[in-house]
Length: 394
Image (cartoon, rainbow, N blue to C red):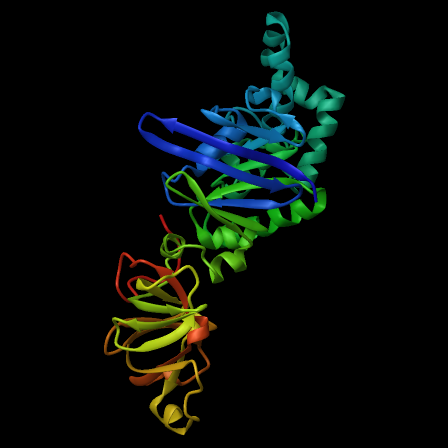
């Protein structure tokens, strides 16, 4: 797979604020790449640099084999779709979509041609054979040819989203940039549009860079995800790897993995004996840690909940298995799963268990997890115990 877009050591400041700090990133051809991070992390700045709306203070932007760092937006074969669709309310769908094509002629023509283009925008959209052919093609691609003569006010949010997508695609860009375009849609529609974007990628092999603060959206849509924190690209990985193996404690905290337990480690060889402040000990892979303060992170789905009777009847815990008495203090039903809040003698744990199991319905239970599933990071987390569950970060 060849490379579509490269950010080569790109940096950008706005006064004292570092928006992009030596970002090195290669986006592959025909992949959906999500830039994930909180507000102010620099992800939209990176998108604007790719589009040509901002220019880097240092570094280069390479598209295919071309250096586009200093090219204006209209000379870049890049499509852009914003959170606000910016459709012209007085123009029908076809003319809104055709605008992307006609704008190229507008920029390259003389004053007289520009004036004629703007005055005859709708006529050209409907009567120019080449414009009509390309517009019809993209309207069929996003499955809205029947809406060609409607105005935006007569469209649903999902239909407006497709019009904006068609307008971004009509110029046949090599890369499509999407800046949180689904945030205004309801949950069901977001899910459907995500599936349609993936289908579009498979249909025409389009490369997409998708900016979002919503980890669920990034994980559901992207082939790879890059996490940006304070202007730095701190981890790039496929969604499963990113979720299961955050590179740093800061990434684990951003992903809001709930079970972050402080303690102290004694490292020997590749292993670490960890005494947690919660009152229990474990031996696990040392990771990046040395002797001293550490934070253990346990995914909620890696914690089993046993009833007292099940724990009594079970075999003695195997080496590396940790069992802790706990009290169920809250449950959140999620259909196939239940998020269970457990109070242990030294910490609060969150366990995500199948809803068909019975143990979580009891008050007094036993929490069980394998030390091999524990991730260890140097330093201490911002909060002790569970705090919050994994989810969106605003």
